[in-house]
Image 1 (tube, rainbow, N blue to C red):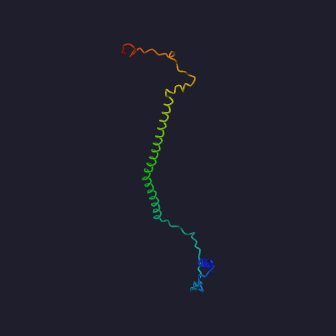
Image 2: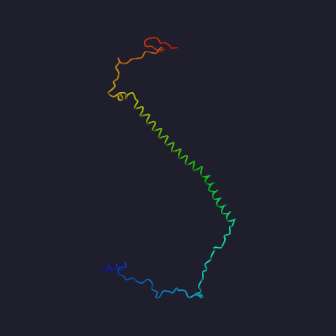
Image 3: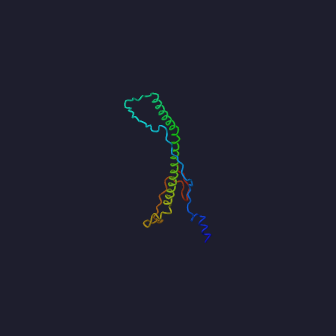
Length: 161
């Protein structure tokens, strides 16, 4: 038990607080009376209604020159930066249009592939369904050859001129 009390004392649990300031009397920092301290100041109000403002032409022209030069400088900077900014915007638009062109070309290729799949002659039976039947050999009518025959079966060739 003695060790536990020593630990509490070491941590400061059982000690009374000691005063931090051991000086008996604080120092007196008050100022002594100054000579002629009892003089009071009188404040007079000033009426400026009759005062006329003097216009300084040099000051006015200096202000105009400063404003004009600031405006001219900003216009020059805008003229120098403007084409660059427009070029950046135009190049961004061109890249967007290139991407869209590529996307549309891919879409056209997909549509052509789909069209070729649909127009494949192997799909004729699928298109016909049950309504149409292929013709028999007797139903097929062959047209006669044109007058300008180039070749004939089982015979000599004839040139058309």
